[in-house]
Amino acid sequence: MQMSFYFSDTAVLLFDFWSVHTPTGMVLSVLVIVLLSMLYEAVKMGKAMLLRRALLALPRSLSRESLVEPEEGGTGPGQGRWFRYHVGQTLFHVVQVVLGYMVMLAVMSYNAWIFLGAIVGSTLGYFVVYPLLGRG
Image (cartoon, rainbow, N blue to C red):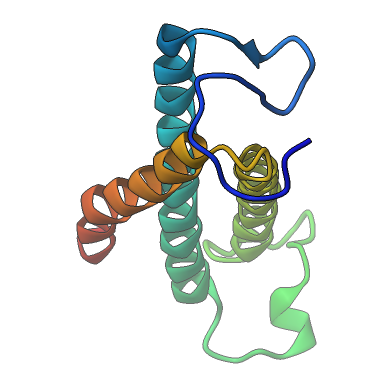
């Protein structure tokens, strides 16, 4: 295995079955890495939007009683909502970590085309998705 960046149309990415041997296969693989990197940026943005909503859902007083799940008799409008946001953020975090490691491991193939695909995907994802953060 090569341990420095190189330009080639052959590579094995992530799994043995993702073995690239043709220029067309490399173009498709780079496109997949670009999309994974863009999805990573979108998940980061979604996690940030969910964090903002979770902070707005927190009660003004952070006493222990106001953060527990509502009991059967008490049905306050904001009670327990923060927990659902926390579960959502946790799921977003798991997806973000999985995507990040997949892109990182693909880059560790040391194929320069794959590396450039990860950089382009991250750049495009940030450029396209982050203006939406101010709207959410």
